[in-house]
Length: 593
Image (cartoon, rainbow, N blue to C red; front, side):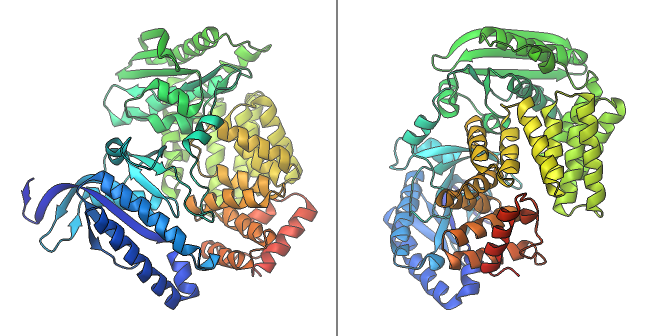
């Protein structure tokens, strides 16, 4: 323990909690909300003290406490959620109060007055925001201490960046089902996970993120690009089951047990490797491992120039296909390993552009757009560069980041068509076109583009998920539900937008209760996604829950106060006249003008 001018530094377990949807509850009935909150604060005090913790603060709807041991913090969090869920049963659904709880183990600075602050507290607060409503999210440091010592099972939930913290934080969600009416889909039990993720009959593989051995942050996009290109190439093979990038990258930057990876992702083989860039030289190591036994099937080392990166990728893909005895269809190999570009500089700029693109905010999208354009200036025939440049324009138009959305859509369409002409086998080009056409209201053309994308690549998870959404709102909902489920199997730790696609496919298949669960998960993770909010509103109306539907409309209007029942992005995407009319009527019943 070190002394500090402002307090004492110590290692403690930190519990942070707040109320999900607190603003809505206060707006609807502030007196009842305050009374319920005060009652539930008593639950927190009781459970925290019972497990040798100390309440630091209970300002507003938040709770902050510290514990000597991580096991005590987790047990207190679990018992709080159970007790709160039991008390909620006596309240109307619209008045139930659900807490999100985050638990971290880290260093804090404790002042003489008992307050605490520091990185340990900041991380706990971030975990709280990632937790399910009615759930618990813990850091990797907590998980490492409580594994096998806690009545709560946990499921890995990926790594997340925390402001002012250098390294991403490993996160785990408690695999518990507290309260049947939780605003999120309950976390699966271990038995559910094992049953859902049995390896498929065909050869299956997860390509783990290659390690960046150069130690230079600027080389991260290039190293990640090595992994992503292999995943993309392999996913184009009809007879190979490939786990998507979003799921494999949850293992980035930490020691990996390939047996556990095989169990969590449901695959028989794992590829791992490293890359080091020294000037214009490249050193690449890769090894293919049988997940169940941990047996190494082969290992390769390459010491080449930067210009040889494409040959290295081709060779690795071919070695994998040979080892796994994957039968290629006619012309499949040529289509798979024909690169969009053979220009290393254009490729490097493209990878850096992807790094910014994935941050998905206004500033980084503009940077990505400039980098993609620069890569195309170096290689005007770079088809994947065209696709991603097109997506930046489309997203700017869709998100209100463009002064002229229609011009942005026009540019995106032109780039999608140019990419498709440059490479008629490129599913990503057709996928881009399906998105832009849907957002413009060209339903028949959007469906045709989605069908083409699926025909060209029926295995890539993001294509399955997006095309599932397009088909769901255009009269093919049951087929769409199957596509999204396939996407989720290939991407067990999916991006949050998958649950919007799943919700739409279930809603239009009249599987309303399942749609509610999917949409709740979507809006809890993406509270500013308007289609998710409107989809959930309609699902509440169809399920006969008018109070919840009315409350959901308020959330939609918070995002965009100008929308009406007829004029909004979700309704515009619905192709069937009868389905669109029904959706508009449901939104009006919920109170949207």
